[in-house]
Image (cartoon, rainbow, N blue to C red; front, side, top):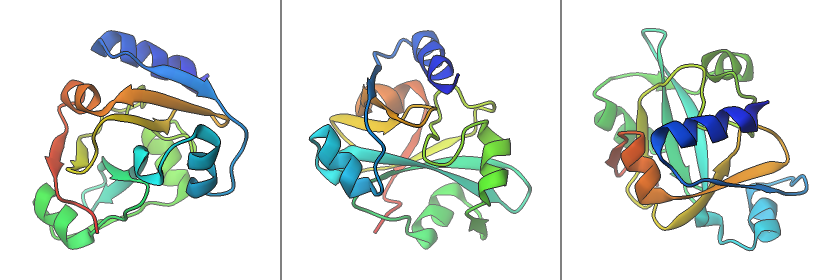
Amino acid sequence: MGRERVTEAAERLGLDVELVERPAADSLESAAALLGLDPASIVKSLVVARSDGTFLFALVPGDRQIAWAKLRAAVGVNKLRLPSAEEALGATDYERGTITPLGSSTAWPVFADERIAGRIAMGAGEHGYSAFVDAAALLAALHATVADITS
């Protein structure tokens, strides 16, 4: 199960992660309302493909989007793209909507937007669950590159 991989990864990293069961939501805004959060407090974990066939995670506040030029500059490459759902699954062993760097089948580099702060909710490796974690602790544990990568 995906949430077990998340929990095991958090334990290895010394992170305090709380998994919360929640009803299905049809949008990020709906998920935020169900969890009693502002959309900015839900962090999207996006898998991004590089031209060399490798991937990275981009962590983006729920009320923002990747600014591709900024992300390319932070990564130091000229080309990046969102992979297909199948590629993302192959890169992480998580389905879209459940993706998280915690417990991913490969520990891809993490690039996080500088606005991510406080207690956040993110994918928990399994549909119907959210993982709550302190953003600073998460970013430190993942050795994330923190930069302005959104608009």
